[in-house]
Image 1 (cartoon, rainbow, N blue to C red):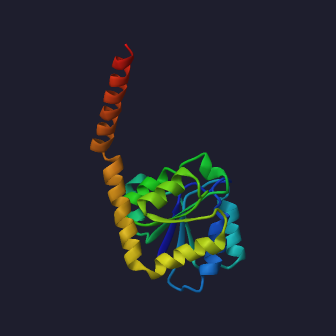
Image 2 (image 1 turned 90 degrees about the vertical axis):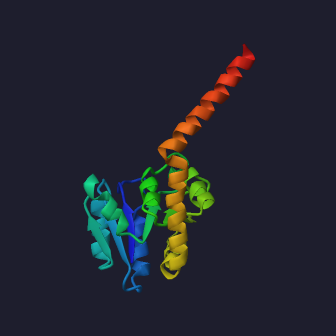
Length: 189
């Protein structure tokens, strides 16, 4: 069972949660936390993993774009993490690839952020409080035990991307906005 974090491992990403979660989840023998990426906190995160003798964490370097589909397809669940307050001012673009891969997301992110709102409204995963290892592990454990929920969330994520971010949808939204602005301008003149 692959829980995947793929992205930057920096100071604002709250990735130290992953090591604490891996330790708590270690009794689940077939669960692996795969961390893919690089960044300023990678060495510290890897060092903490070694210090805790965690055998359920696998680190991989940033992968080339051509293997992205296969890499994402190997996950059962994706995780997003941030420090408290960061989610209010940024939106992790990698969530789009996660949703396209038709896998659920566990997002440890500010609960009032745009990302959390999207995850909840689209029903594509579970949102937990940043840094709360108990909530985070409970969300992963829930998805571990409920394959049908994972499948439903994953399919909703892929459909969400098709319906909201396809080229046709974006062009139609642009044209709709163009018509609205045109009407507004004509009514003022």
